[in-house]
Image (cartoon, rainbow, N blue to C red; front, top):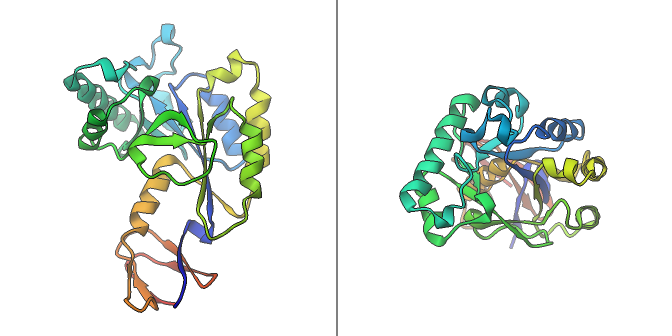
Length: 267
C-alpha cells in the first residue's frame, strides 16, 4: 500500500510564521527586517486606537502599504480584556475592528489574537460566528507541533523566550514524516524597550532563505490546511481530485506531487 502524506507548498514539511500585536510604530522596522529575509508575518491591530498619539499608534490609512505582503488581523477595536466584557461587547469589538480594518486592507480580515490573552470557550464560539477562523493565545509550547485547535492557537515562543535556541532546533529538524511549525509572537515595541533589535535581526537572518521552510502568514496556513482537507482520494490511493482553488501538495512514497485546482492527478 502506498504511503500518502500531506505537504506544505513545494513539498515542504516545515513552516515558519510570525505574529505581532498592537500595531505600534516599531512595526515599520520589523516589517523591513521580515522583508529583507523573506519572512512573512501577521499583525493584529486595534482599529479604534489608530491615529491616537497618546496610544502611540500609526495612522490607520498607512497600514495597507506598511503591511503589504503580510497579514492584517483583528485584535479587537480598543483592546479590552474581553473575558470580563458582556458578550454583546465582545462581538461588537470584533466586528467593528473587522469592518474598519477591511475598509483599509481591501480584503476580508479573518484572523485574530485575543487581547491580553483573554478568552473563554464561549468567546471562542462567538469569534467563529463573527467570521474569525483562528485566534492566537499567549500560551507557548516551546515545540513545533501543528495546532489541534486554531481558535486556541499556541505559539512556539515569545521572541524573548529562547528564540535563537528554538530557531536552531527548528532548522535541525529533518524527519520528513512529520509536519513542523515554528510560531513566534510578541510586540514590536518590546525590541525598543528591551534594546534588543539585534535579536530579531539575527533570528531572521538565520531562518531566512531555507529551501525546506514555507514562510507564511497565519491565515495562509489556515487556508492551505483547510483546502488540503478537501482533497478527494481514490479508494486504492492511486489518484486524487482537488476541488479547491489552491494548488495542493502531496507526498506519495517519498515523491512530491502538486495537484492543481480543479484537476485530478494520478500518482
